[in-house]
Image (cartoon, rainbow, N blue to C red; front, side, top):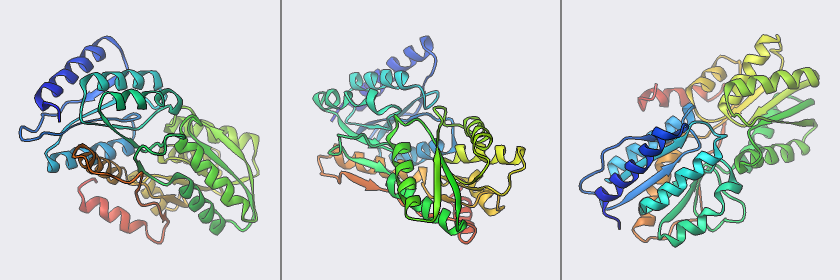
Length: 324
């Protein structure tokens, strides 16, 4: 295992030098645990949403309880694939015991798996698996199944009609798999799938713009599954601005804003994805990997349908856990 103090100082020096010269790269400053022998770097897709804030909370709280030296890094937005690559390069040079990576762009990140292995660093993919590298442990949602769940819920809401999918960049497997599961699930129903809208900027504004375009191009659309809570909240704003309260909206992510929208019957349902559980589980698996233990290739967190029938349970949990 690496010298934790030397590792921590080296990485902070590298990152803060870069962030002072290059925009878009950010790091969470945390003090290393003196008694720890395990060092972990976690590189997120971004930190501009509640989902990634919850992921960070799960990472940091579990690192504290496990006495792990943790450094969390992230680019400014999920479209900053080149920036994330620089963060990966910095992490390799710092030589932590384990790197937890949520890839922004699967094709850009894919070649670095071998370089990470050659450096003697353990690797875990979080939130985003990479096709062709299924042997590398993954922590996150079963995204294809999540899309199938969304199709099932949509079929409960609509007996017939036209539906669509709004997802992020298709270079991210997470959005491709959710869309694929949704489309396949819809094919098994009486509903008609009209197409997808790709939103490189997976944000509220991006979701709103995509939904406005969708409703203008296909006013017959009656239901839309959005691949994230941010996209769903943007789609909700678009529906409200166009007075299309008849559209059945669904999203994904267990976060307070979209759960409140479900409670208030502005969003029909969401597919659960706890960012806190994802971060916590990834850190737990990183500790096992650093100790030389074998870990499963697939470490799925819970995905289930949250609707008006059970949303109060999830909102109550947020309050009990102090996240609201």
